[in-house]
Length: 197
Image 1 (cartoon, rainbow, N blue to C red):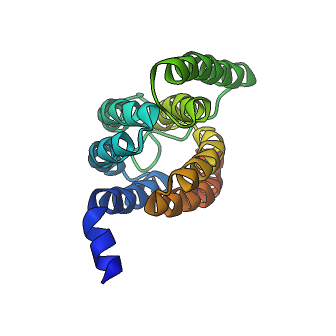
Image 2 (image 1 turned 120 degrees about the vertical axis):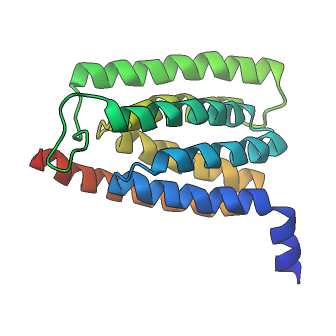
């Protein structure tokens, strides 16, 4: 009875976790339906993170909403080069571009961490800022089908797991533990496709 009561009280988070797992599976398999599902997941998690006072993660969901529209469009129509399955091929980036993307993540972390620390009641302002900033970069990389997005996600998901344990968001903890594990699988899967293209 307590489980049913808890599920009824936290149904938005549970639905978000379930849709997030399906989104991840679609990402790894490069199934374009990940993008409309990303829109649904984002809307659900706006409510979850607002309630938990993770404001940077909440605002990240707004970004995810719009980047999902961009990713959906790019995977349908972007890049004139298509692979044998008529999909945009998996690509890699140079060391210079990798360093630029890491630097962008760090600068965004410092700026947003400062804002969260000084102007909100966020319980973990700099960690919240880090996961948000790195996620902005990683999701853009996913939309562009850049394989290194999975390396970003491994770190982001592991840090996020710790944050959600701290806040008692247990369905989301399970989701992010799975995300961390699946990011390794995603990297390996996309690496095989990178070699083939």
